[in-house]
Structure formats: C-alpha cells, structure tokens
Amino acid sequence: MSFPSSAIGLPSSLDYKLPPSLPDSARAYSVNVSPDGITSVTGTANNNAIFVANSTGAFGNFSSQVVSFTIPSGMSDSVFLDPASTSLSFTMQYTTSATAQSVTGGVFNLIGSGASWFDQLVLYSNNTPIETVNQYGLLQNFLLQNTVSQSERNGGISICMGADSNSNNGIDLGAVASTTYRYSFTIPLLSVIGANTDKFFPVGSINNLQLQMTTANLVCLVSHCTAVATTPTIGAITLADFTLNMKYIDVGDMAGALLKQTLVDGKWFLKSQTYTNSTVTIPNASSGAQQLLLQIRNTSVKSLFHTFGATASASSPNGYYDALNISLNTRQCQVGGMFYPNKSINDMSRPSEGYPYLIQSLAQGGGITKAYGTAINRAQYLTNISALAGLNADSGYCVITSGVRTMPTGDDGAFTILAKYPSSFYCGYDLEKSSGILFQGVNTRAQPPFLNLNIGTAVPSTIICQAWGLSDVILAVDINSKSVQAFI
Image 1 (tube, rainbow, N blue to C red):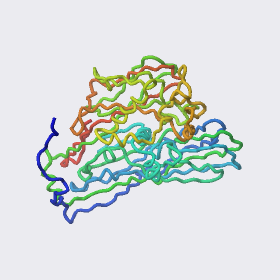
Image 2 (image 1 turned 120 degrees about the horizontal axis):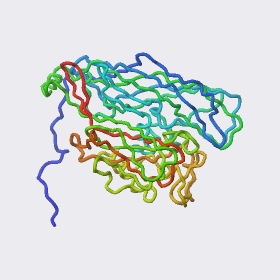
Image 3 (image 1 turned 120 degrees about the vertical axis):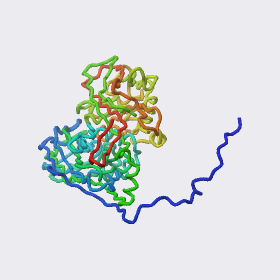
Image 4 (image 1 turned 135 degrees about the vertical axis):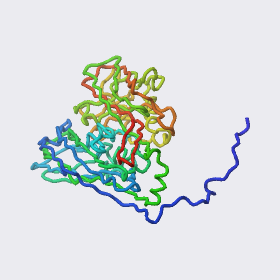
C-alpha cells in the first residue's frame, strides 16, 4: 500500500498575512475587588495538640461563612473579562502557644492547597444563581493532583497555592511554640468566569454579577509524629485580606460595533463548562455488589470523577481528602443501558487498567501523554483501606496503620506518612462522544448515572463517595436586558 497523499499547500510558517488588530482605543486593565460584607473569617480556638505521639492531630470545625464579591459589570457592551486571569487571593494566620516542644519525625501540613478553605462557589446574576460548584476545595485538589507533575506542583504552583518539595499535601506549616504564622495564597477559580471558559466573558453586557465563596466547615490541617514530649497548641485560625483579581479588556466602540453585528437576536452565546456534585454514603461494613445513584442530571456530561473518603482517623488522617481504595473488585459507570468502560475495572487484580481511564476523562481529547506524569506516585494510588486475605506489603498494595503506609519491600520509605503524601485513589470515566463539538457528552436528565461497585472486603467505616460531572454549559447573554441565562 502506497503512502497516502494530501493536497499541495504551504506550511503555516509561510503564511505572512498579518493577524487582525484592535483599534488604538482598546485597553486592558486589572480589576481587584474586596468583599462586600465579611472581610475576615475566624474559627474558634481548637486548643488541640498539633502533634500527637504515634497518631494524627485532629483540628475540628472551622467557621462556615459566605464571602461575597460584587463584580463590576454592565458598563459597556465593549468590555470583556479574561477568565484566564481570574483568581482569588487571601491570607491565613494562627498563633501557637506552649512553653516547650519535643517532637520526633513531626510534620504539620495544609491539606491540598489554599482552595481547601472553601466548600462552595456560587455565581449570581440579578440574584439568580447561574453556577454552583459544591465541594469546591475537594474538587480543586482532585484536579491539582491529577493534572500537574511533581516539578509543576513543587515549582510555580507552590508559591501561590501552597506545596512543598517534600510533600504532595500542601505546604509544611510552622509549629514552633509561642509564634504567630501568616501565609498568603492565590488560587484560580473553577468557574465560568475562571478556568472553565476559554473565550472572553462579556461582563459589560450583564448587570448585577456577584460571586459568593463559602469557607470550609472543617479545618483543613493535619499533623503526625512518632514521639512527643511537650506539644504546642494552635489557636484560632483567621482567613483575611480576601481579594478577587480580574483582568478586563475594553475592545473599543469600533470593535464593539462589529461584534454586535454577529449577535443572534441580540444575544451572545458563550460555551463553557461546569462541575455538578453528588454525594453518596456507603454504610459501615458494606461489601459485595453496590449501586450508587449519582444525582447529576445535565444535558451534556462529558466526564465523571469520583473519590472514596472517610472521616479523619488513623486510616484517613486527611479526612475526605484521602482518596481511598475500598477493596474494589470491580467498578463501572452506567448511564441508561450504556456502560463506561465496556469492560468493568478490577482495581485489586489489575490496578494499572483503571488509571488510564482517569487520565482519559481528564485529558478531554488531548494532552494524555503529559497527563500520565502527575504528582501521584504508586504508593499513593495503591493505598487500600481494608486488608484482603493474603494482602501484604509485597502485594503491590499499601495498607494503612496509624497514619503510616506499610510499603512494599525494597521501597525507600519516602512516601509512608499520609499527612505528607495522601492516599490518591482517584477514579474517572470519559463519557464524550467526540471532542471539539457542541454537547458531545451524555444526556443524563432522564437517566442519571450509577456507579456499579463490587467491594471485596467489608469497609471498616462509613465511606463517602464524592462525585462530580463535568458538563457543557451555554451562557446566553442578552445585551438588551443585560441578563445572562445558563443552559446546562
């Protein structure tokens, strides 16, 4: 068979046509917005020992408060927001108190990233919600762990979001007695006005935009040590200096008039995507066949992600941020009569087969090669919450005891402590029909997705399955009424 031929043409490097330009009146400028009401959030003093010998410190509840921002909008149809530049910055401060400290092998970490301090994101227009993202911090940690490499996480991301070269679980926090510590974070927004949209957002054509971020209900800190004599205690944690950072582009009246000529019935139609959360509980001692109904009912679900977590304990010191393998013999996603993938995944016998499906669901048609080089290592992915009969350190799975993994023989032991290297058994399913088209996902409005599981060994505690559906969103912006409507 001869080599296939193609039409004769010129390479793009020989295309000397100048790209289009904006008029001289166009300009770009930064917009930094402070909260409307609450400017700081302070939790109650935990007064817990930071380090507990041969155990993991627990820090209780934080203060769940709504931090609200009014986004400047409605000024002109020629003004747009660049979603790639949208971020949220804030500071974290606490004070330790004690007279002396003696800790052996101690670590004290922020779990995940700065986003762990937020449980929910809601975007409003004219007091009507157009986007809601629940379990926000957990979702951002899921994406962070699975889409960046070690060098990326320990490089630039560590400066603004919080990570250290010797930990996948956020930054090492200070724990010297009688000292006040202050940390600064800047996190991207998983929103239609943030990382989920690749086109300029017509902010000047919309009235009354408001962003609400709800702070976390639980303190997202964890500690561990092997021996301790005297420990400091941690006082109340304060989050303050909240700022919503954005970049606006005014294309000018001439370009704005040209854009208006392209409108359909006086409306912009903007394609974006968002995450819909569903939470399902697996009761203690459950085993065998389980079917979990996910309340994700959208027109076009492109991917589905989920984790299994437990409340903070010796097996799960990071709480729900520990993504645990619950001894799954098989798992599969079902929507109506369709199964994803066609062949069920056996994470106990063939763990390597499940991971590519996760990467495929994240890659969305491209970048799969890069996505394989994530921050997750073998020990984190293969952490099992229950010991099956015959399961031991040499089986390829790591069993947890008192916040420490039993590593396979020959391992250098660098990834034993869960407080530093959390369990990272993440699951994903690609539901796309074809990339690059509108509504390429699966319609789950009439037939919501199920997770079909078979648990080999009874779970030792109540398990929470957190799932998110990545769905297409169409934003219809009416320049006459200056309103926006979301179709999902």
